[in-house]
Length: 551
Ligand code: GLN
Image (cartoon, rainbow, N blue to C red; front, side, top):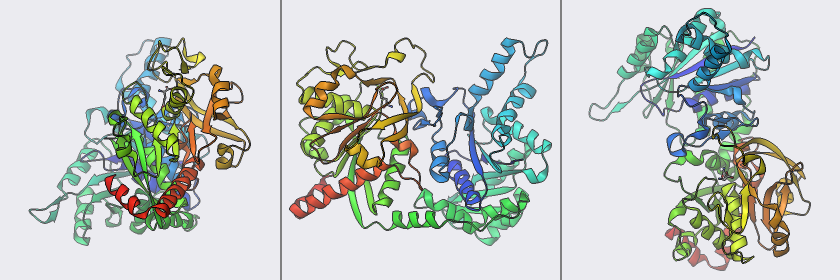
């Protein structure tokens, strides 16, 4: 039987519940326990797949093709285990299930209500992963902040589970903020007291209070929080701002978060935490011996969360290369032929990001051209790969109106076209080509050197694809399809023959990069960028330093 930990948040949003949940999971995993994390989100969308990245950050796709919250990315990056559709549940999905059942007649004669029908469905899903027999511990993060109208049914479900379960099978961690008032020179506990009081009014009593704070908590303050929040003093955990999210598990270890959890859940016979690899990784992140400037060309660059997995994959790849990856965010909408040299001249590598719609695509195409012509390491992901194909068609094959039918339905050269299976689909939710598919890699290609194997699987999220009727033309001119789906022939990887490092992938490699398994394309791209930078330095050290300053 699995034991259950619930993580709630108080006072304000954006306190980092996902990181705290993932850090706790990491510590428990490092002691030999089998742990998974799930997230329950209180919004009405069935999943975040149709949300604009400006609203909700990146949409994280799991192996089984679920479009989920970006916190699932943190869970996978920390634990190096896969999550599934079952790991992310929204209010929308709960209601959809209950309403479908009502239509089928499952509740004949009954009034369908929030309590018990909605809360029963929430509880059923909260327990689902634990009942699989695969886990010792299931951590459930409840999205939103306690006190929000929309999270009430989730808190009520937690209350009922608290009542139904044995004490040693159930635990609530409440994450809260201890603000520092400059004028008073004091950390303030009142918001935390209120938030715990609110929880208590809803019948849920936190066992552990994790306090986000900019300043260290004194013993006296810890005692005060403990007293007013009705927990033991040792259960007041300080979570100071960290320089890297990957430091948080070690900070939580120092604070004894995992020991309190193990004690409260009556778990015995666990090992000491095995965090050697994690510490090694962190050491490399903190002590790089070189640095590269990577241009991230996208249109959501104002919001860092929109490219979360890409940014984290760079941290992992940087560590492998002992290299600080300095990301230079460049808005694709503002790149023109006239300013491209000025904007991209100081870079050591270029990544063209995924995306949808026409806004900013011409800038992306200009950026690809710059990387191709200047032998700058290039990495295109999904839409970024499609832009590389269009650029090659226009500027090398001479098909001047080449485009994707996503942007121009009337182009006479649709080098990127809607997938056959997508042509009849009109609904937007969960209908893209999603999740993990195999890819067969050609031997003696860059992709083969990168992966070191001919068979891989990667995750997808797209509707358009390389138009295979153009493939002979591309290959004759030097752009190769070095990876294809073995069943359909869909082009998964393109690369340039005569370029030091130029690769575009239809899939999203960033989704599978974890601390323990950094993603090979990212690792190889950073290595190539490092080499590019070293060469540039050798040939013109003065120019190099000037270029970096212009970035
Ligand atoms: N818009 C493109 C497609 O649907 C690319 C999608 C993406 O970059 N994730 O094929």
